[in-house]
Image (cartoon, rainbow, N blue to C red; front, side, top):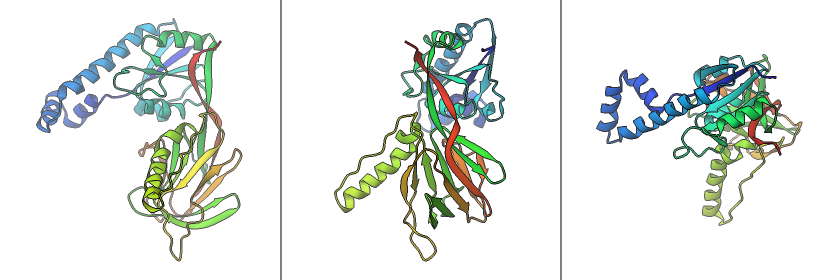
Length: 309
């Protein structure tokens, strides 16, 4: 079934500093001058490089092994015969999954002391066994629901955690929102649409904010919504909706059932965007005249979780 292993890597914080400041010595001066501990940056970088070097040998199964930096993932052509291994923080798995949808994806935690690893069930030592089981079609696969935004011109964007529809900068978004036969012109900070996997991420911060406001105004405390990663529903929240003569607040939050659709018509002359999973650089333009339809994607992210019983 598979003839290639694609290992997705990322830059460390030290890599990014050196790229910005032109040299390691300049990076060291910058961090220490600001009162930081440069040794921590070096330790993190060394740990990650050792993990990659170990994996280079551990993933030698006699088939092609290709390393790809996360910056190239949006344009990389994943093949149906690829097994994908993401080595980094949880966000690397989320952002790889939407481009490698359909391919088994193995999340490897290169540094458990630093990274939570919610989406990284395997350590460096366990990566070979997880990959071997995947190559033999014996691994347990979690079919994780993705969200999809599509524009009338054919452009499309998937999300593992969430989609954001709104302004590129900190100004009000203007749009018309339609859900379940209800329609309303709104002005807000944008719309957040979350999958089950994202319900403990950005969406949870919205519930935390609402919780604090509820405590201040009425003392009532609500419970955040938690959904399984495989749940086909989506959760939507309008952030900071503004009530005026031209904008309403009757559609603020809800659950979009499987098969449902959220329709958003942009009323923003410039600066409207749709991005996913917090990656602002990878976005769809969403200015006046554009209409977005958001629904559960037909594709699934296939995360390797453990061996099948």
